[in-house]
Image (cartoon, rainbow, N blue to C red):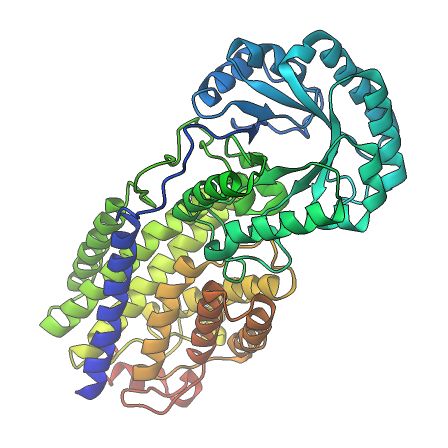
Length: 554
């Protein structure tokens, strides 16, 4: 009886956790109001529509799109920073003048010297034509960070632009690279640094992010006395993977922008927020998080206000609806398979509610992370596998609660024989469950290895893995687990990867801790444990005996 109560308690806790998570996302969060009406300046890149990317040769953004973008931004800022004069961006200053916006004109400098010459020529033409709309020229962006040119070569380009215009000229890079190349300060009118607490080598949690900006800027000012220091990029992402204690979220993004605005007023800081619009193409470079730095989304909608409470997800009720739909689906499927006793039905309802909440989170993650049709299809496929595995495992647990023999996933050898012959003591449901377990173990092991050795831009697929991992672990506890070398090898990979992930991510990263726990749960679910209801391996039991034990096909 205690075992049954424990299984039901785990299912109830999972359902409650899913509902509570979605409910919390819908509650207004009180934040300090920003003491400004508009942001002083935002980074503007127009590549926010499907298929738009600066890497597409010959692509030109239409003046109409730039004009519409700047009309939206004029309601929220007084200035835009650009990064290039190519691909139609030469039109920005003239269109910005129309909307009352000032411009920080960016010229893109890289390792291609011929392209650099063309960019300088374009930029100087823009300056001659629209200097009255431009406050400063930024020659090069994070060139030292990308290690594309030495500081001396950058200084030469900067000097040529300074000689051709009376406008202030600067160079922008991450603050550490300015400290490593102090001589470059003599080439610029003022120093432009990038301060992104999320991307620091020691990521800052949101509680310390604004203070970190102020602290680092004081250090840079001390290193360059007599030079004005401008924050060329400061921001926070609204979606993506957690880095140590730094969590991307809409509420955290709003909090950072507001606290930065207030800190800037208190410490007399000049700054530019990255960025105007979410940029889906940047996910190719930085993973999911790269596409969600905008104060407006990719469709031009405001993501948060500068005053008042902020809701993480205005559509949070869809998670509750998904939870309810999951409960109904699981109960219907279980009853249709002959599970009609109340304990089994209760277990199916709780498991379905937990899975429905997780499935809604899965969908959100897949949409945010998928960069192409292949990744979208892969996410959908694994979601389907997760759904089928969770449903079948929950049905097996419901059988056990109703006093019948539970399902036990067939090992890889039995699954392989399933495709050649139907002769096996394992039921169709058990072989299907074994197939799903093998697929999920493989996917989890691949994700674990990637997160252990190349984690920087990878998400933790928590919502995708949690329901089947818990379901398989409970099923192994009540029914035992039969596995062959294939499953055990994948389990060994998960066990080995889990501590590596925790060591790399740190104890402050609760997502990493949760993923490590799921890896161990998956691994534990394939090791046979002696408990009531356990069944022998298929090589210990002939098919006729198996049919006599009440393990009917489902």
